[in-house]
Structure formats: structure tokens, C-alpha cells
Length: 210
Image (cartoon, rainbow, N blue to C red):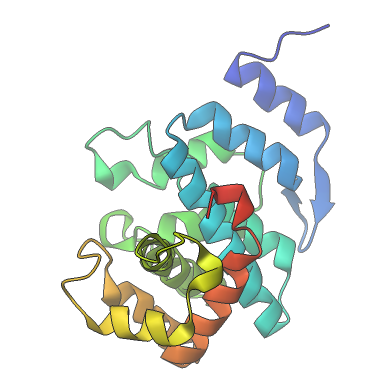
């Protein structure tokens, strides 16, 4: 039996089992993508963050009637190079392309680079690209809201809680609220986005320990 501990061997094996999806691109299955994430990212909180963004992207895809698997995969893989970049944030998204080359469509690769557009200079243009930026940012706010609940559970977080905490700039200071507002660039009002994001994340609460 072949040993897949080597990321290179794993990548080769995944290529063999790719599913053909969408507009002529290739897509990993969800299980393959999660395995790839865990091979490249050792910090559990970062893996949980990536799963959270996947969950929110899936919820937003459902709202728009878009390809839920495509959007979810993009969210799940968006920080796959997190531990490779060190302090070189200008490489974030660029190194992800090296990890994912041949495994996902160009649409996914571009969205991942565009979520760090300030440094990669890949300007977000499509709905999915702008959605990823908003979903990435709101995931931190939602998790922070859950952690201040007495139960520390997402189930107890309400949209009005998220709205209140969004306005409180002293709460979860690391959350970039201007990036959350990318939801308005795809014509989703702020509070509606909070609702979609919260509902989407609650579907994955057990998987991320909330």
C-alpha cells in the first residue's frame, strides 16, 4: 500500500480521483479538500476558521442559487498556504496557487488570490470573489459572538447580537468590518448577510466545536 504521508504523493493521488465540475475546471471532493487542508495546516484554529468560511460560503451560494460545492470548496481552501507564507503576507494566495495547481479550477484560484487583493493586486471582480472576502471577515465576528455566550455555543447567537457586536468597534478588534461590508458589493444588505452567515455557520457548529 502506497504511503501518502508525503504532500507530493498525496497531491498526485488526489489528481487521479478528481471530479469534473462546472465550467471545464477540476474540483476536489470535500473530503479530498479537507485532507489537503490538514496536510498543509497544522493549527487547529486555522483549520476551524477555513471550515467556518466554507460553511458561510455555502450558505451564501444557496441564497444566490450558485454552485454550493464550488463556493464551499473556495472557502475551505482559501488559507491553505497560511503556514507556508511566514511573515510574507504578499505571498498569501500566491503560494496557495502552487499548492492547488491542477486540483481546482482557475475560478477558485483567482478567488483565493483576490481575497488578499491588497497585496496580490488581484482585484476581486466576480460575485464569488467578493463573497469570499466578506465571508472570511464575518467568520471571526460570529465565532467571537459565540464565545461570549454563557454556553459558548453558536446556537445561542442571534442576528441582533451580531448586529450589535458589529457596531461595537471595541469588540473583536481584529475583525475587519470594512471587509464584511463587501456583502453590499454583491447586493446583500448587511443584516441579511448576518442572517445568512449565521445560519450557514450553525450547520457546521459541531465540526468547529461551537
